[in-house]
Figure 1: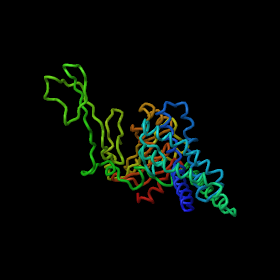
Figure 2: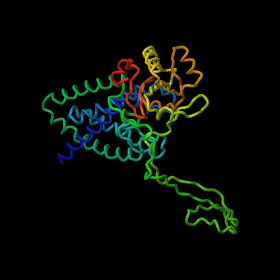
Figure 3: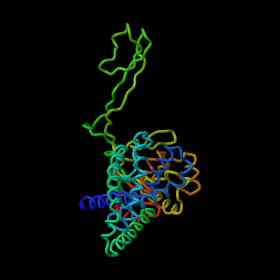
Figure 4: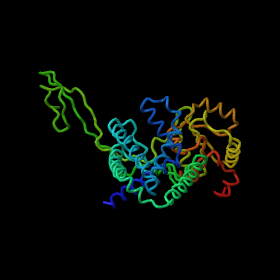
Length: 375
């Protein structure tokens, strides 16, 4: 029985640490997920709180996990862990039934679960939380020194350092499809043997004699019995999802709506892509460095473009106001937020392969680019 108690505490702690860590080092990713929830639930008035809530939730999970793992203040943190699960377990059941978002974001981008998988996972972990809470005094009596407190404080300091760095630069670990080393065309392709979508067709026929509408399957619908039945309606239900490439719905368009991404992702030379999902909120404190790099790249005969979801007229106004020498192309805002957690951020590709990504605080000089990539 003691082994079950300890395993419950340790397993609960490890998973919560992992969940809080992967969300903590991607604070903007957590904010975007809260934004998705608020929009889906019609709570746009709470959008301002998306970022602080994302940071707070990540730390709360991490702190509870650390306390469980190191057996620190279990009389308090066991209840916090149980309350946490008591809140999120029914919430994830509702999400699984209503499906307002397709990914709960429980583990950030590190591990994507379906809504039902998330609910089943929470059933397991609320059980572990109950076991630990019932035995909280037993755990507390095992602590004979200040080592758990010292370990917890040390881990918190390291955690805050990682979060601070990830906020001011880019996440320490990139779990998204556009990570460095990814070949974009390959990540957009579908293997020949990939699973295909399977649909089940439901047919509705109206009985000419009674006027009743009856449901039929593909095996028994009365398409030949025109004397008694007439077609009324059909419904297609997805019964098996097909393969979805890691990168999908990736386009960027000219002012005329022409998708010209292939011109750049198949370019055998270096291509600089400045990513600014919203120019109105884009930081301009390093605009001089961006303009200098863009001018240098263009002088070298390299492509330097900006991808944004901002309307073309507003982009042109931004270019005029800030002396931007590069072209602007339109791209989906969600895709841009996925590419890089910085507004703006810079991505360098060659032959469609992502070679580097930089936060606006870390825009490299032409000298550094030249030394690093042999230009």
